[in-house]
Length: 520
Image (cartoon, rainbow, N blue to C red):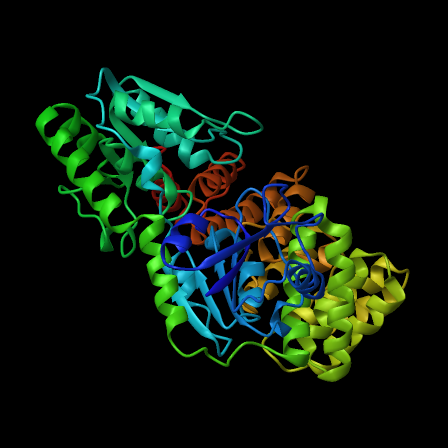
């Protein structure tokens, strides 16, 4: 079976061993079909295939962490199509609509894979894996006392990670390798650290089955990993393959492992055996082959549903990654306009209005947002549509009309005032728009903001009034704690207390966020 592979080619060799004739298609001169753009349109790809004299029966798009690819028009491709999305907790905002364009969709994390509920296509959880050939050879005996960690360390971006490492550094020698912008550690160097130190540490950016723990175990390192209940422990057992830690057990587990070399050796051996046997690219290729061996499902989006889904994914990806924004936003615009004309729906008009606003097309944006407001009246997301329209009216010199819409929402203040943003934050939270994991919208036009961005703005605007700012920081902290950002929440609670906040539960909130963030 000829399989066209777009995006990452990590699975190419494993798929070939499953009997597929793999044709790679990517922005690389090494690809069978080199591309000039990471987001080709299907007719372009189909034309290149015809020139090669190849008739593909299956298409697999593998997500790329280093640079997202969103080919367009694949929903119309006359072959079985598969999408595999990575880092899904941080990319669900665009992966969810995009996945509806394929016959089969898989995501790398359990919760997000189970949340692919709006489409009618075949959906799967396919955890990440490693390539065993990168970890061949007998693991060396640890020659370095202490703990190693490989990854980005930046207190401003990932404060929990910095807090975990600070605790470890107070208990044992700590070696950190890797970083951003050219400081990534090559696999062979990372393997050397994992094999050379007594313990290799993993901290979760999000709870799930992620690559770093698999790499540590594949290399034969002794792994001490932050717990991910209901995910990692479905495959790897505490005391058999690794040790897990929580905020309350980190010190205890670390000391226990450091004191027992035989235990560390046993965990390293059994963890390595388990990863190489069940979590290789070859095993994931087997799973994909099994899906493709079944009759092709017929549930991918088509017509106006496909235009809306493709337009939404292109819009969010364009706004999230500015380096690819121009082309993606223009493509999104055409698709969302087609969807809005074919099947008027408040959310599609709202997305279209955001798209038009992002391109500076304000007259069209006002019309689209007004349509969303009218069609969505009485729905659960009516406050979202009303806020976006009112903000667009203010933006375009019509504050009286914007103020009229706000008053019907019970908002008695104007944009740019802390009270307005606090009220908007509450309304959006109630409408289910608390935040978007992996995508801060703070730099976007406020009509695209979630509750989190409005709370942040309200707190920032009140910085010169301690009495006003303290309760706003308290509410911002509550939201941050709820969305698993305990370190940022702790900062808010601590500042609120310093400003005189006397909320009865403030000390409990400080203690909880401090514990969950490995601060206390």
